[in-house]
Length: 305
Length: 305
Image (cartoon, rainbow over all chains, first blue to last red; front, side, top):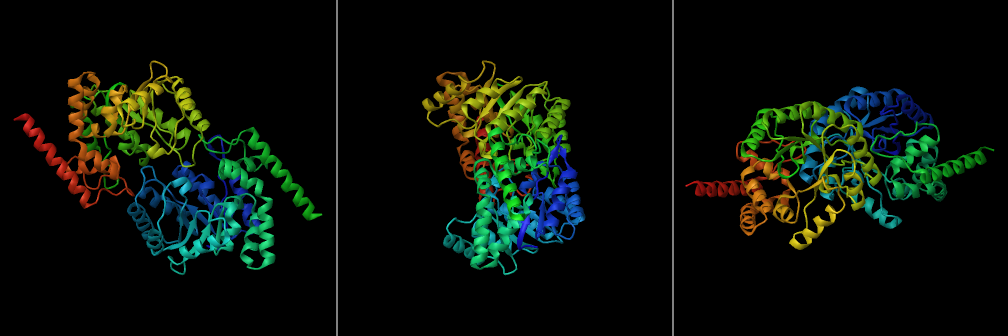
């Protein structure tokens, strides 16, 4: 479950409530596509914008719609006791694992974060993925903190920020983190544009935004990059290069807004599907998303004829 | 209400629930001391760590314990609809005004923030204070955004981050902001160590952390700095200088952790009073807080003998 492609679906809203049918369609599609795991209520799933009842509903719907694919559920919240309640809810819903980022309002110290993971892992009966996402949490893990948290019971994987772009630097970076962790703890890369480099640098998993909406190209990237041979590398690099217009939009607008606009364009979510105050892309951004979708469509028609 | 000293009390917890008697004692003390307004559920009041029921309870307790002193209530939340519900709750509780920071998980754009304030102010029947607190929200207001938000209905004041340390720079800074705002919108300084400089630079109010726990020295600073004469300046500067050990601790540990430790030391809150994962000060920090409290105590005995 902590290797290969973990797909992070959106949680689309309609009229400021969770669009459960749309969510279930997304999750069902990921199961059919054959992703290795599904992570509901990640950053892409807008977890921190939803209240406890909504998150319980989404966690249940994810498990029910995922078939045999294991489901991880994000449990991040500002207060430790809230995280513990969300962990209980996720486990009751049938989550195979949970995902936890050190969310903050007041800047957190290393001791705060260690205490959070210590308190939460002590009460778990499923594995936990440590979610290092400085772009949203603004918390920076030190090597020492990685090592101390990875040694806690039930910690199974660490979702790291994008690796350096240079392959040799990336390999050294992953090797350095690997040396800090017990053998059973896997490393997953995030930052979709860095997926090929991250997997080829030794990451075990790709915690993927776009994998939650376009699982086929994400699987092509994952399988190719993990093959460990030149043909695999070529296939992964080509699949990632085709998504370059999307990566460029991610750099400009963040992956969530772009992925939501693409889901809306594809008819998989209703406009607007993001929780306000987050506004979707403007008209120019949406036009670029539409152009990308047409290109993708033309490519797959070529591939099947 | 949007001038003078607005005191921000802590919301102490005990066993992970709101310690209402302790909170009511704090608020009652502020009323007796004669602060100009009380802002419950500011950053110092840990608003974002509390759920809706807890915040409703705290808002009601604040209004009930504040006597004739007007009460403002913080209504920040991640999702616009949550903010709107909290605004309703605050108004039902009897809040004379509300305070709103653009809290984020996904980084917000200027359009997101303008939309948030537009949507929220449209439904208010009390005034709103714009809470510019980049240390916790990581959002930076532009001058243009200040101007557009200040022109919205019901906007009464802007709580700005610390002003520059140099008096001339501070005056120019406040003057520049003042020129962007309608005449009825006041400017309040935050960052307690900058209070004297901010008020003397032309701010109308001090939105004060320490004013929520030690209202007397905060009132001495406010009254002196707003007097606009040399004697007032001397008194304000001397009162602020006496608190320098506290300002130094604020710089090192953040104002919330230090103020909570001081409240705990003074027996006004039970250890630990902060919501986990926030850990209180370590032993060395607490020792410095205790030394400061003894100094303060000795000073006030001198003053009354």
